[in-house]
Image (cartoon, rainbow, N blue to C red; front, side, top):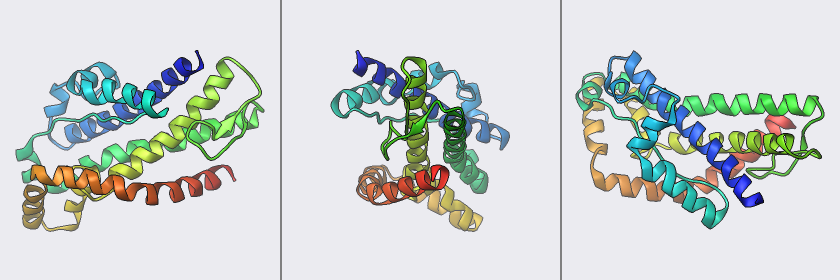
Length: 226
């Protein structure tokens, strides 16, 4: 029963965080001139259009990863107009950064909720782990809330940092266009679209990420919660 409840909380945090990330991409693209995701229904916090677009990454893989390891991984995606990104590479770069920025906002909001819970004597400092940043002596809803805000804080920090890695197909690779002039930016975007770079980029990201994430995670917990 506890595993079922934990799985529900993990999935709630995962799908909410992922949908916010993709909706931020879609909204930024729409505001910057590309309505592709808007017409696809992705400018929304309704998870259904996001799940419909990526059922494997939003349902199957998260559930399988939780059953296998006790935590969730997965993915979603936002459609965009390739011609728009080549015409406005800087706008495309800002669109790429919108997703990680939304996760950083959720990190701060989760930290604020944790502080409120501590001030109200509902939460107690826990362990440096994904689901136990804060704990509680209470049961029921309060215990679930402590675990949920802990997961939201850690998961969104992970999503923000992972997606900022400058490796294709991650958002950080698209943001590099901001550092280039328009002609070089277009050539760069064409270059990183090679499908082979997707596999290489994901492989390198997973190899490097553990060395980056945990020091930042411990620092962030100490920074926000002392």
